[in-house]
Length: 327
Image (tube, rainbow, N blue to C red; front, side, top):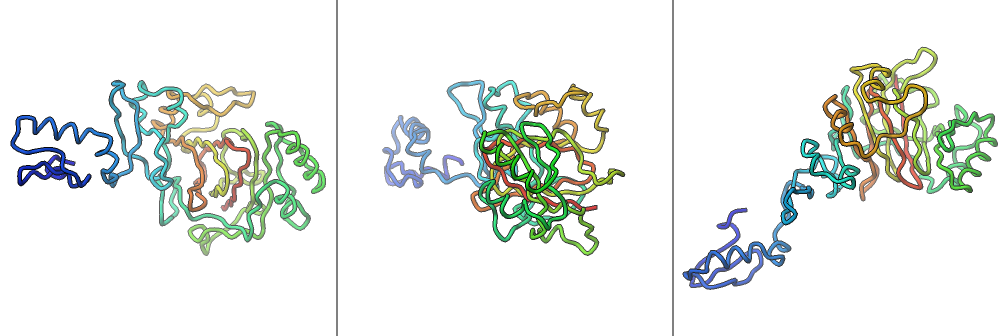
């Protein structure tokens, strides 16, 4: 904002209309100095109107100054002001800043499907959301659903033999405060309108609720169905908690991506965090790296087009995700 928009000079006085105060007398040699001191004052800055474009603080090479950069559409929707988006200035980032880097897909208020990832407020819904593991087990770890749940405890897949077996394993893991996740069929889930079309062919048993606790993940993967590994579209609606997300386009094979990033071919790799050079390569290769979490107004949904590789890491003690897949 220019000086003319901030300051009014007339009738022998210098007046700031934002602060509604007189700041000095006009016509004196010190006029410019008085104006500059006021414009830089905390009192004046506090009363300035907020910018129409969201901005986030960015580290500066000058410790006495603070630079700002525009936010992405997703951070703007979340009103998240502590993210960093300009990876070309990575030499200015500390380890703390790197952990808040955001390179997210576009946020769409009106969701329309194409072959690119996007984020939206419109997602899957349940008649009643479980607030903890016990409520989840009471609602969805019961007979009548299309399949037994998938369960992973402390990064180990558990072969579930029955509904009772699933309940025992998860209750014990929860009691011992182990990291776990579990995916249950949810036949009472309602898909978002943008997902439901006349040619919708849902993947059997994969309209589901996924719950978890702690830093759990299943590694980099593509959503596929059956022995023929048919590629499918998917969406994930985060209702509670937060997850770090890495996405890569279908421009390389799984093995080529692993070689590109130096990920171990045998053992399961930990989710890549805090590596700014890796994040820059993800961006340069057309991928995404960001943290997904609900807004104060409700859930957030990620659309994953068929063929896209994705990797999600749980960040909170309780996460609840609703998801669907289709051919």
